[in-house]
Each structure stands twice: as C-alpha cells, then as structure tokens.
Image (cartoon, rainbow, N blue to C red; front, side):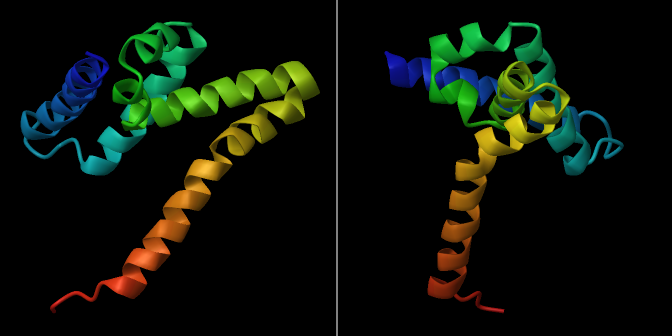
Length: 118
C-alpha cells in the first residue's frame, strides 16, 4: 500500500507541474516550474502542511522537487533554532548536502560510463 500511495502522490505532483507547462502556452518555462515547486514545498513545510504529506506518502512526497523545498525549509528552521540567523543559511545547505553530493557523484560516474551517440 505504501508504494501505491507514493506513486499516486508523486505522480499527482508531477502531473500538476506538467499541466502547468502544457496549459500556459509556453509562458511558464521548466525553470519557472522548478523554482515554483521548490518554493511551494518550502512554504508548505514552513506552514506545517507538508510533513503530514511526507508521513502519508513517503518517497512520493520527498522525491519530487517539492520535497527538496521541504528539506531546505526544515534544515533552515532547525538551523535557526540552534544557531540563530546564521543557522538559517547553514541549516538548509547542511540538510541537503548528502543528496546534492550523491547527485553530483552519480552524475559524474554516469557521464564516464555512457557516451552519447551524437
């Protein structure tokens, strides 16, 4: 059942992003959608509305870009509680560092292993 919930929630988030791009006649670019999803996740997290979705859908809520915004917001909130204003900046980066590092490392290895057929 957990997989089904994750699939449905993650798929719905992606569906909304795709519809936003398709129905706005190219006025909304993928970059706008990326920033919008991260910002939406951060705002919903700061309001306490995203955590219940994470508890319900697991990876379906944490893997899409809204989950990245949630991760940054939670890190900033915890960092602010520990270190004050400087913790706002440190907390978000520290909470996302492992995921960003993994993306860079695995992207590098993928680039070494696979060659495009230009």
